[in-house]
Amino acid sequence: MVARLREKPGGEALDVVVGDMTSATTSKTYPLVYLVFNTVYNILTQEGQVECFRNAARHLEDGGLFVIEAAPPWILIRGNQFVNVEYISTGSVVLDVNQYDHVTQILDENHVTSPLTASGWAPSHAVSSGQARWTSWRRLRASGLSSGRADGTASRSSNRARFM
Image 1 (cartoon, rainbow, N blue to C red):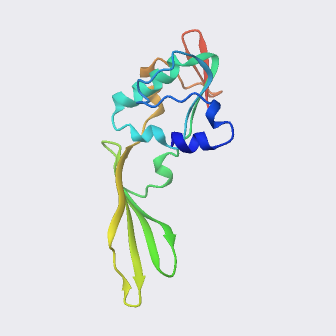
Image 2 (cartoon, one colour):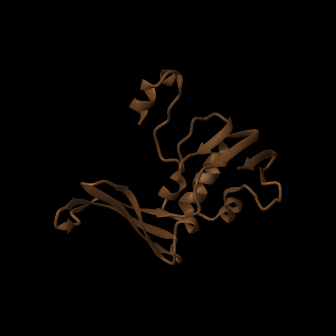
Image 3 (cartoon, one colour):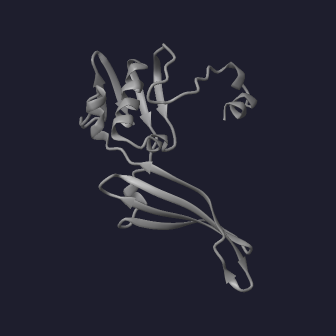
């Protein structure tokens, strides 16, 4: 991913830290900490997610923003399982097959691909499998940030952080 970033215009000028988002540091603060595209769900424990939020808070300037881009799982989950068609053509289909445990908040996910033949559909193999854990924004309090304000803001000591 870093190599792809470097290929883009201006990519060589960006500082990149490769590490665990719960503990990696740049020893700097920023006006924006951005946790992109559901990456928070890759941290499979509540403690790890809280540490990620604490680490984000450590990197915020006064008035800085902590933006978390994540789709709440209840948008997709019907009961405790769901199947989505990711790709379909005249020659193959890829399904996203999921099961969600509401107690542990763990989502088990499999991407299954299959050729479509004259005799029908024959599942062949899982393209990829993984787990994800949904986080509750109430965990912000445990990270040193507080939330629950009607204006969507949260604060850390003297810092103001707005959650969008």
